[in-house]
Length: 360
Image (cartoon, rainbow, N blue to C red; front, side, top):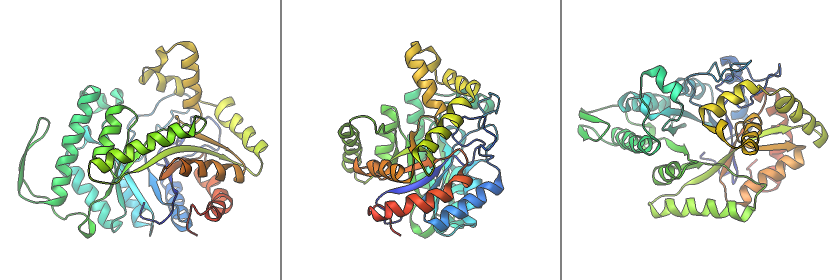
């Protein structure tokens, strides 16, 4: 996140079993610690900018129990920061589930281990089944962001001062004093994935990075206008913001091979039971049939990320379009990160360097 790369590239979801591929194929991502450690060190050596985990507490079922085994993200980040040198590693924190004093100290610990390379992804929550496991009643959508704002206000105060009281709607605290402070007298880089108006407004108001959807098959001018509005909104709030999206990569030496593997892994062998559970949790199972089927296909193809399917030239060109619309970067996932990332590093990154989008 601190590099000179015009297009920043990260890896998304590797802390979860199956990653972001809702597939039954045998080679799908196992998500165990050994694979995560090897992946982080490979990405670090290759100059990948960041690792972004998913905050998941309960799997989605289906034949594979999609994302059923996951690592808690702050401890995951701390371990990986200790084993790497340059890459930024995020923790994804559900504000309603983590008391701010505990969360702030956990994150500062990770930030010291990584010497300033920890990042905070703030999540206000949506999965009611997960909240029920904790015995926490989720607020309505707007109230979740109201609570998230209060939570982040407290966390920032903890990082910046000592001996204060806080009297809010959700948090009432006395004599707060938490040390040490973040590494180097700064604070961790912060992000939020904002898809709703409330989510986008929260990110624009508070964060260094907004993650959002980007349909590159649409009118690119419309996507560029959305990016401009986000950046202008942040400037009006007194700071700069980077705008990022997420992508799902199927990269092979030829377009034909890539399309064949895409069809095999995420269409012919999709875990449709898990997909349908996800849709039901989000209330998308009640959509009209045509829209429901479109949503079903979108989630099977990588949980709604931009499908990037092709040979190295095509993947590089698609990533260049992300930059063309003004986006700062993209977080990528693969069916199996460790099997597929070396080819991406060898073939796509040099193309992006020649385009001037990446620093060798």
